[in-house]
Image (tube, rainbow, N blue to C red; front, side):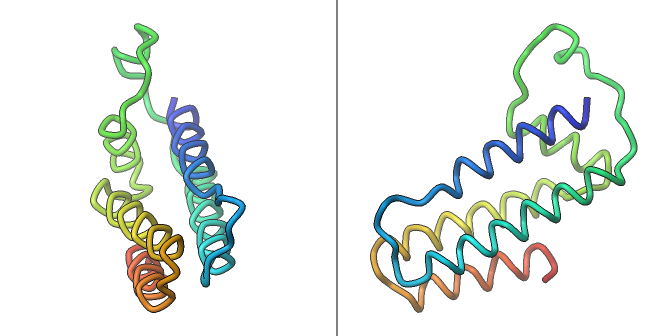
Length: 118
């Protein structure tokens, strides 16, 4: 079940990484970091032990961000706090990029890199 939840996280991550037709001052850096984040998640998923399906999963309920975070933390992949910190930083980077603010974008990307340990 952990792989299904991880696939959901990766799908959300990829959807969030899609950029508009406008390329801001650090769009390429955002894309590169998003690829690193996705690769790190995939690598951790490949080495993570399988988890028992939850009751909610057995009842065919969709995972929530909280349940995905709990599953990842339980599998020692990434803490919920780390996931949230990376998501917030990447959101800030995309907003700064869309506004044409290269300094703010680069600062947010640096925050995301620190959060993932890179």
